[in-house]
Image (cartoon, helix red, strand yellow):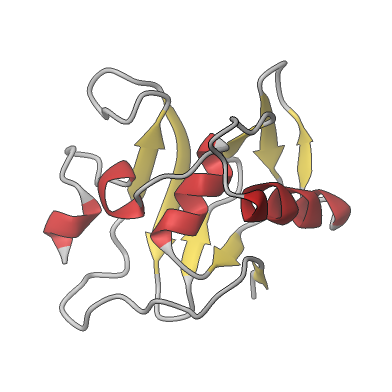
Length: 129
């Protein structure tokens, strides 16, 4: 079972959502232009950020303080390793309460998980529900 991180109540996917759908987020938020940096699945247990996803090392000024706390908590569990000068690499799958918290963690700033996560064809999560 994946470790659970993040604060707040868990947001379950709608009953019609297919939880085996692979979701991606990219460096610039566009699946056709940006490089995929993280993979996830929205399950009944939580938003599952998958092993080998990349996590930005630096938060931006606009970042919610909880983003830094979540990243530090995950580092304390030794689940992040240096990947390159800008990213950590996630060593295990982890569960987060929502798509937005996962996007915030990956990108290091406040994000809308409904638009940051897409399927491999580029359809936003909000349109997959």
